[in-house]
Image 1 (cartoon, one colour):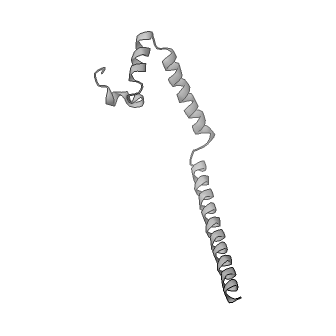
Image 2 (tube, helix red, strand yellow; image 1 turned 180 degrees about the vertical axis):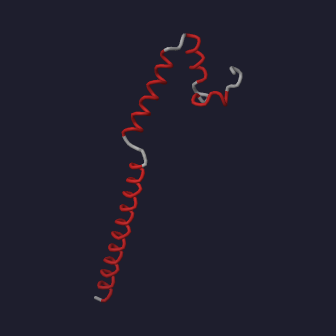
Image 3 (cartoon, rainbow, N blue to C red; image 1 turned 120 degrees about the vertical axis):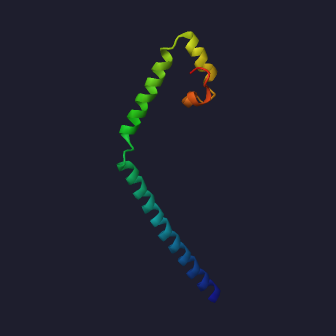
Length: 90
């Protein structure tokens, strides 16, 4: 009897601590998300990224055959920062 009462109190205490910590964690995560949202994340950043991606695609579409073959050969070798890896062209 004494053991079951002690076990019930201990389980209730652990569940209470868990809910208290989880509530604070969720509150902190929501606060951080709100800060990032207000700091400039969201639709404007997605639209800007979409425009950059479309400009990149247009750049590839406007390449002639030689430029495109060179692009394909260099694609896996740091295509975002090719000037750091491929200094022969410059």
